[in-house]
Image (cartoon, rainbow, N blue to C red; front, side):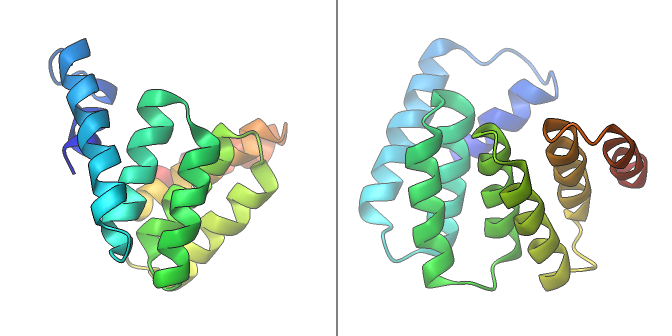
Length: 139
């Protein structure tokens, strides 16, 4: 969870995130993966932190696959699967994941993440019109 908080803090300009804080977030993320092998929520959060802070997208994809095996109905896990897939330059896989997240939780308060993710995935695929449409839907 701390990793996710630090990602948002950095992304939204909510103060500086020091290298020491990133190091600690990654350390705690690895610990969560080790101890939370049966906790899909801990795993999807850890996968996002790894992908965002370390660039270990393949490891993150493996962690998110485990989370989805434990709970295939976790919309936020599917969202993170989409984000990790975008980071791996796998836009079609990302689109499938974001679509699934949307179907699982169509009224989700974090649904903006689903539509922003779809915009990013279409952008990565070079489908600029679709990217603009999804970006407009997210605002």
